[in-house]
Amino acid sequence: MPVVRSVDSSALADAAALLRAGGLVSFPTETVYGLGADATNSHAVARIYEAKGRPSFNPLICHVANPSSLQTLVRLDDRAHRIVAAFWPGPLTLVLPRQDGCPLSPLVSAGLPSVAVRMPDHPLALALLQEVGFPVAAPSANRSGMISPTRAAHVIASLGDRVDMVLDGGGCGVGLESTVIDLSGPDIVLLRPGGVPRERLEAVLGPLLCAMDNDTAPISPGQLLSHYAPSCPVRLNALSAGPGEVLLGFGPSGVAVGAGLNLSLSGDLVEAAANLFAMLYELDDAGCQGIAVMPVPDHGLGLAINDRLRRAAVPRDPRQGAVITGRK
Ligand code: TXA
Ligand code: MG
Figure 1: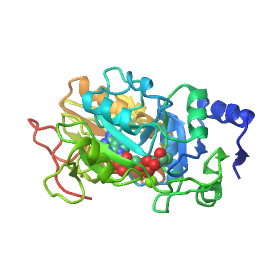
Figure 2 (figure 1 turned 180 degrees about the vertical axis):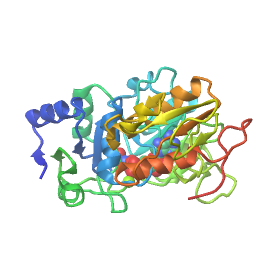
Figure 3 (figure 1 turned 45 degrees about the horizontal axis):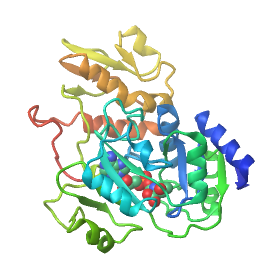
């Protein structure tokens, strides 16, 4: 069983030390309990997906202690400044373009060029974020397919010892997840209804496009069949590279067949998930004619890795980048 600590300064220091070491700490926010990891550490972020047992990599929200920490993470326009001033701290998540040189793991964005950020309105969450000094990626602290936890006991019941420590801050006031709005394009799109009602947003922002009730509105990346994908073709379950291709290996046998990069030499799925997007970017930038990927076992985190590789391998129009071919 994980350590459950009611909060005092030594519990906060221990939680921060665990996060710095790449561990998973569940902490209360005003919405629901989050399952937190260092958002700049790909291996730690991969452990979130493993603990939740998600069969795919949905992008995660990065939690920050104050708006000024956004500068190095995302590009803010006037709309974003206005929204932050009106609604933060609070249950509102903003999807914004990643800043150049953004230190966040590409895994928190699931390889997308955007990142979701929020400043929670909860003293313990803010104290923890302040203490660590880096953004903390945190989905709701439940196994995939289960309901979001609003008490420390819910976290334990759902995740057990898949989480290293739970900070017990009692019940969550809002009790439902944050509202998510997308500011990465010209229109402001409501991606997920949540703690801040649509009407309150519209009073400040004017009418919003809504991903749920409008077929022409952009849909949440979690619903796209084809997400981030390299510009060159991706071939799956390859045992060797074909002409012009570079091989992305998995496991010890990758060495013998001359893999250019290897997701995990030892065949560790957490390491492979941590490397996935960064290695796809690197091979794509190397200017090869195609990326051949060795088979990755279809269990544990391998399910999410293979889901994302299948999406990357969907044929696309090279002039348009990723094509939206359908909903999940
Ligand atoms: O209240 C909350 O938001 C809680 C607490 C812990 O902060 N967190 C939470 O995270 O609900 P999660 O992972 O369960 O939901 C994140 C939502 C998903 O719907 C995801 O698709 C969306 O945010 N999201 C994250 N990054 C995105 C991105 N780059 N573009 C579009 N949507 C994104
Ligand atoms: Mg959730």
